[in-house]
Length: 205
Image (cartoon, rainbow, N blue to C red; front, side, top):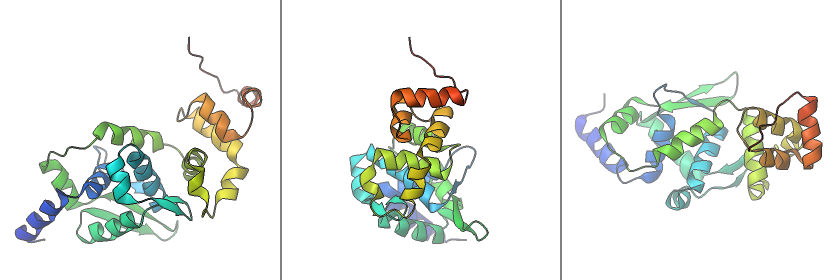
């Protein structure tokens, strides 16, 4: 149990740390849904920060082994897990870490009225929910190719781009135009591919 005065000091510090506030809010929802893996967590924070210049400046995302990554966020994850603001459980069989809201992180969010873009957070959660890591990487890589320079899996993603584009389109995560871009095909070729897979195209009237 953390002494009350330490907890108060921790919460006071959090009130002035926009980056940690967004990280906590991303991990918190009514279903307490965790985020499986640092790669996925980084991409979700990256997409959120693209819409908030001050947040993007804090995180300082750079191209890394699996696309955009932030040393600032890595430092946050270590500090915040030690203080029970978040929990980080490593799964040795899958070699990734499961991140979720911690006891004190939940308490902080429930007692403070933060001025964050919660609608944006919800939209990004929904965008990333239900897609595979490869689909998330494809969405990231083909939208921000400058973030692929150091990637260790770029060739793997490129080799599966048609399949990944189909998956993202089938799950209503991207527009038809974006799916065509990701697939590497032209419009007619992608339409033929959709037809061969019995995937309907929703036409706007």
